[in-house]
Image 1 (tube, rainbow, N blue to C red):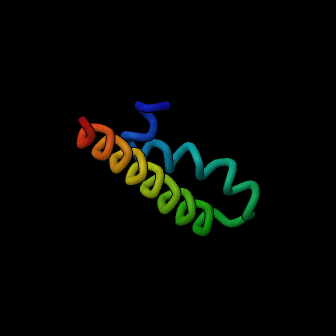
Image 2: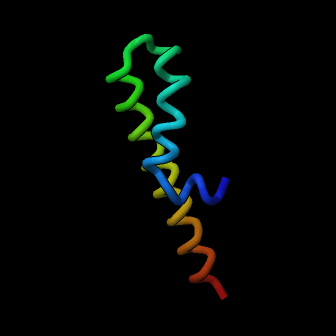
Image 3: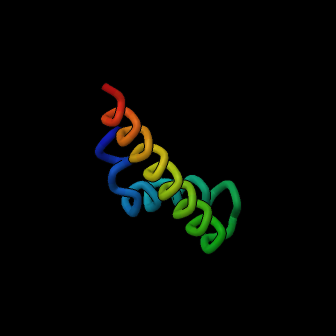
Length: 55
């Protein structure tokens, strides 16, 4: 999972397939998948930065 979170584009491609079924619209699914993937990647990076900052 860590490898997938560090690569947001790959995660967005994988998320777009189930979201395409849920939303029944490919453009909306890709948009939501990209936003979600980059948000998860950003949260993971911030978590790692805060973890390294503490002694």
